[in-house]
Amino acid sequence: MKWVGRLFGLIIVALVALIAWGWQSDMSLAELTPRYTTEASRFVTLDNGLAVHARDEGNQNGETIVLIHGSSASLHTWEPWVARLKDDYRVVSMDLAGHGLTGPHPAHDYSMAGQAALVDETLRKMNIPDGYTIVGSSMGGFISWLHTLNYADRVKRLAIIGSSGMPYDTKGDQPFIYRAMKMPGIRNIMRKVTPRVAVADTMRKVYNGNPAVVTEKMIDRYWHMLLREGNREATGIRNQGQRDMTAYKRLPDLYQPTLVMWGEVDALVPATDATRFAEILPDPTLVIYPDLGHIPFEEDADRTVADFKTFISANP
Image (cartoon, rainbow, N blue to C red):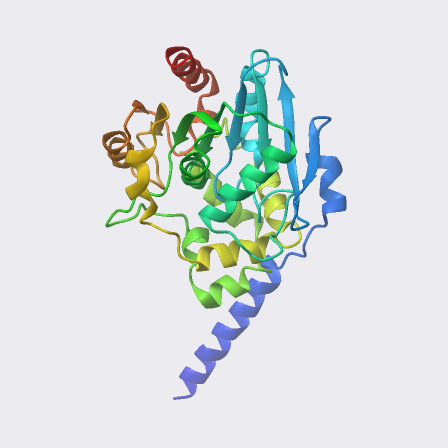
């Protein structure tokens, strides 16, 4: 039985080598801020002390569009849309708790209701008036429609893109890094072991393998935002927690006009959910892109912005 001991030893050596290869130190806010902020960036301090990284851009006399990113993303994901909207609209984006430059929540509240409340407090402290249109992608879609339900008097229109929050029997073939974050032992290791190649693999899956979109610069940004001090621990806690998957039952109460945008080849959230949202929502507009994936607004910004503007015009 000596071979068993040798095999075990080889496994341990391989595991140690893997950890050593993928070990990454945290990156401080001080070193990330100069690289990932612009003149439009500001840090909005909430009552709990959390400083939310936000941007307020565009036409200050136009209608306000609020953009909410998805899981493990940041406000940077909306830059293609901001560039196409800012001439006509005031555009507000922010990094959610546990994401981007905002970093971890003081009480580790990464629930959808908690994030929806964070969005509300951030907008109020930025003096954003009632009557804005809120747009959310993936997890940000869940947060956006829940925010619209919880703060209905503030929101004029809603748009959800590849939104989570709809319960279903089987999930899509999630990237390994997402599945690994749900495994207790692996999750703890990944709080320090975060190789860039794993982030790159995840992004290629999420972005439908589009090399024109998934650039080396974008991979670096996602990787650095994950390495931001406290974000990996926040990601582990968020993936460990259970989302309220009964909230969708409140969707019939959502009276605001709602744009449902989806990529038919979405690898994370099935496109059939788009139809399910449209069937439940009282006032939906459904747009499905047969050639796009989970992040259609970055994969084809021109087409998606055009459809968004059409929705705005149709619901004045």
